[in-house]
Amino acid sequence: MKKVYLETFGCQMNVSDSERVATSLASRGFEITPNEELADIFLLNTCSVREKAEHKLYARVGRIRNSGREKPVIGIMGCVAQLEGETLFKKISGVDFVIGTKAVGRVKEAIDRVLDGDRDVADLGERERNYDWSVSDAQRNSPYVAFVPIIEGCNKFCTYCIVPFSRGREVSLPASEIIRQVLELRRQSVKEVHLIGQNVNSYRPPSGSEPSAVAGGLTQSIDNSGLEKFRGATPFSKLLRAVAATGIERIKFNTSFPRDFHADIVDAINENENLCNWVHLPVQSGSNRILKTMRRGHTIESYLKKIDNLKASKREISLTTDIIVGFPGETVEDFEETVKVVEYCGYDAAYIFKYSPRPGTPAFKMADDVTAEEKTERFQRLETVQRNSQNKALRRYLNKTLEVLAEKPSSRVAEQLSGHSTCHKVVNFQGSAAMLGKIVNVKISEIKANSLYGEVAGIQ
Image (cartoon, rainbow, N blue to C red; front, side, top):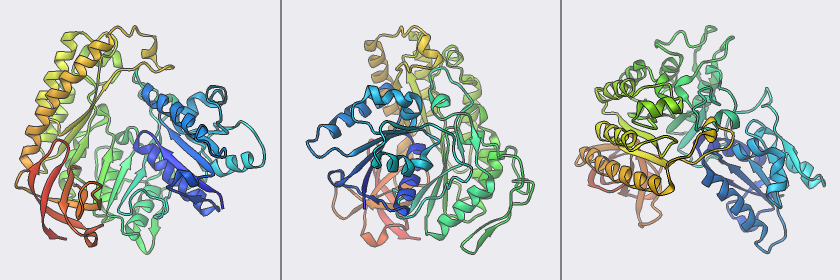
């Protein structure tokens, strides 16, 4: 039995792809191993969103190749594979096969060809019609949390982003398939599902019939008109209500696109306790001029109206975002507008990145006129502003009791567990292994930089 070591870089979509690849390979005679020293085959699932991610790939293949052991089979999956294709065989010595983002269902066939003696095997083709979107519980990263793709690809073409080229155009999964997966995950005792996609709220179900979904004796009726039996102003808000109706304990979704973020999404969260009180809404810049150059499709004024609506929710919704500093043409004044937005929004967390040009994007042709030193200075300044804002935001949880899914033992402290709250905060607390997989009420007693600490006040 050949042993496969699978390593994943990048976003939740990549993690989800890796889980399904592991499920497929394990069901077809391969062993997935966490020990790379035992591996006969290395699969590297790659990210191309930022230049640093690609450099990590090149360095990683080099380390595998020069480890001094008998040469394993090395395969590249994911966005770098899709974009670079067969050129990777020339760029990186030792790569045996390349699998595009929509060909992940055919990894075994590529491995078989290499084991049979073929060289430079590449599959960049389209996804097969009968592709299996389900994931075995044995191959998920967590037995209690599962990623459920609802849409892949992107039609937005932000000028800095490579995703429309690496993942293709937006394609939504049938609502019946999504509901079927959620019901099956609930049957497997999964407590929390994440509905994922590059832009989840751009969800548009494919036309055609949506038969009833059945899984393990649980049924969720979806009639032939699709999601029409569920109230909602958009297909996505209807889908949220449909998933909530399955009765699964916790539902999160990521990532939301501001232009498509309708107020009815907040209404759905307010109406359904199992729709978690967390929204990730990337602003990218606080300057309308830069947003227009980025081709984001929203203005700061429209974005802040959505933020105000979120803050008015009775659920006290946690807000997180993405921000790019040093985009081509960004002036000091543009950057100061971003600082103001961060101060106004009071994000619970922000993922801040220095702009790096990506070949193939429209922004790659723009003059990268903000110096590396300026980018670093702006990054550090904004990080300080966000940290101060984040500290204030997190103080509202002090002495409050949060519902936390106990997910894993702490890697640092003995007899301590770690999990996420409904508002997607990392919470650490003293607890035993018997609590794993349970929803625990934790009273917060300490606020840390990126996490909370508390004491168990009860188990649900």
